[in-house]
Length: 417
Image 1 (cartoon, rainbow, N blue to C red):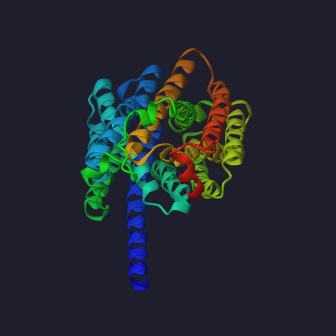
Image 2: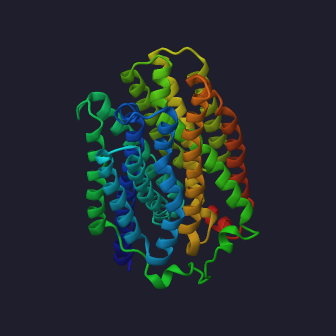
Image 3: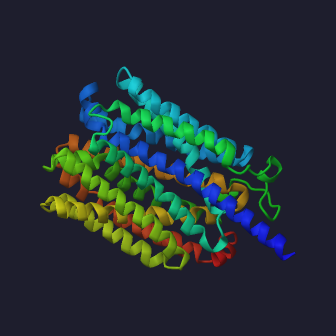
């Protein structure tokens, strides 16, 4: 009997490793793709004769795809199972990324980026829910943090490739890499990702209760859902403004393109560190202090980048701290999002939260473009985002408070998670 238990434990651990590894790779490639848009934006603007407003539309076009397909991906995963959905979504964003270098004008460029975002959006909620469900009960937030840190690693990889000139000075090769790798990962998932739950299990949770939209938008769930959406919207607005616009804003503040990429790399390094450490601290029940410190660090970092004269060393340090602050809140929100909803609608619930957050990824970069078109300096754009950080902190703390308040679905899972 003991041998059987040991074998079962080993199989569970092996499945966890397989799932976390595949999810990690998918999220890493999303980070690579997001960073590709940021580090190539100036070259794209030159190649396609884009004005500042068009640059803002380009930066936000993939986010529109993510917004529209995040909830759809969750619904499809609840209906057909997670494995086929995440494989199809990963293949789509790989193929669409490959189309970007073949764009013939602004319109086709936007279409390629939109389709890339559509694939990313469908994959994201499934990956988060899958990681949470396949993780040990006492380490769920830690594993979500580990997977989420991959988005920063992907961004670092992309920025490093561009900074070193490994692919040359042209902007196109980075999109070829960003397209081929997801297709390779999709093929690997066919072989190594564990099978999804059968269709008969998708309509009900572990207790046999059928899941409905009332489990997301009903009166008992509406407070946590709306607060989660607000916190994610504001946090991602600031985060994606930093990811997509930071190289351009830093160059406008006097940094060379190489120095701007170095600071961007430090931002991604800070994001990576935060995602891993935050997940661990959340499992140790430090949610309130983690959120407070993270958002305060983010606000201070934006102020220093926007309003203080910086040398390269100070800029690198500040970029690192901004990465820590921006990622801290989002890691917390993604770690808790699967715990807010019953199993039968978990993919949908997380998908809706991701979709709400992606409104922020659209609003943040577009807001930066509008402010700059209106005459604001690069530094002022960053400073103007500080009030959003303060409101995001309040919403994030309220999410934690509601979870600890004893929700019927959350309280038992939170007590053992």
